[in-house]
Amino acid sequence: MDNGDGEDVGGISGNWNPDGTEPVIKTVTLPDEVDLYKASFAGGMPRVRFDGRGLPNGLGGSVALKNTVNHHRKISLSMVGRITIRTSLDNGATRQTAN
Image (cartoon, rainbow, N blue to C red; front, top):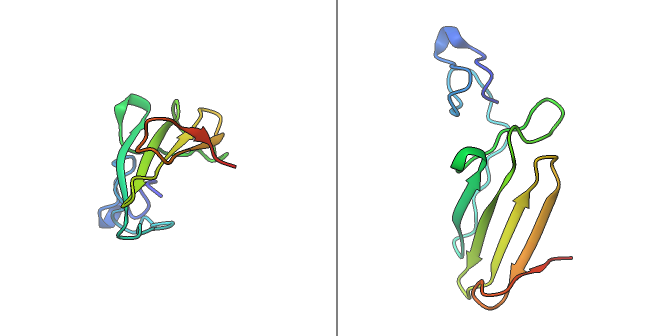
């Protein structure tokens, strides 16, 4: 949460870093066989923020992942928070919406 909590010990609001006493809500490590090879959100940034209502703060965007056998997933986030997952089993040439 990049809210500037703890500015007296280095927390800076809005700098995209958990510093001072700003809490890290969740950290996830991808398995070794999965590669997050592209992330693009509003303004061409590789990251996204959410407001107090849980909506993306911007126009949305997407991340793209692949595994060691070239199965691809593209996870898209709309500006109203809708998530769509598309999958490809042919190295990303064609994609279909995952169930």
